[in-house]
Length: 415
Image (cartoon, rainbow, N blue to C red):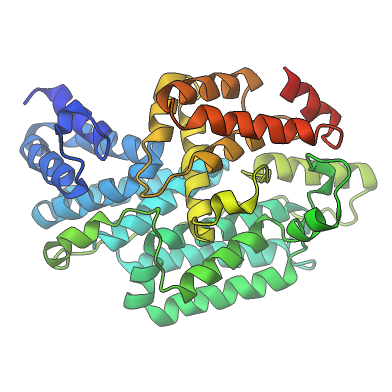
């Protein structure tokens, strides 16, 4: 096996690709990849460690496959996985220190999945959750904290909640009391934080009553509701592959590693009495550093998405936003990963809605508008039978509402 082939196998795991032949069975992919990696580990340990983490960070929709691989390697080479856990911890602490939101969110997902594969102790994950919880609660406390930095506190809580589709079932099974304590803490946090209103950043200028009812939950309240529904449904998520279950009998014998302690970066403390201007400036700085990832633009009638569970909608949006973020330099790859997500249901409508909500985001989109246009064109080529009609429907619906669209959104849509 040449050196590039283990890299290609890691990169292409879970894809329909020549490297894995006709098989689209995830279990086959993991076995093939693991077979090659275990042979290569003797002479390329450092390279494999680095590359595996890079893949997990930049192809986060494949994290369940990488987590299962790590669990299997752990059965034969605990030392390697211990190093990988330590490296994840130092990367995670770096991301916290520099306020790298995508890094924090994705590494926490990787840790959750390593816990599912018995490579990381569940208690270590809960320690991270509790560190986030206490940091968030302190931040919004009028006396001890700095409520202007609520966007950071909200972000930490959203990180905990967004891990649960990947590992909620395991946490509830293995450490039910601890995870219950975390959920109670989140509920307490939600009761003291301020509800955030997005009206100033609404796509539509004249929001009618129905829209207002739809929009009365902010992003975090909405995510909390989705997680509540998920827990009542026994933590079943269609959009998250669970390949570790195919290897459960082996993985259960693995030794789980501890994760070192982490600390959240100290936020600027509240100046005694912030004046109007500095108050506004600091609030703006907090929102820029910890931005809200998505502002949903409801273009299609809900009947088009009725088969998608609330939590699956959230997970697929996460996947799509990550692909858009990590492949913003290579649109062909971007489109091929967007159409090849590891989900069992169709999601063209959701894909169009997510792209348009990014393109029309105020005050500006994460990337240049032309990027989204090119991605839409590539997606039409990749899914000629399905996507063009969906895009046409989205454009038509937006043009019907153009009189209500914000002026800046209108210009972008026309361009």
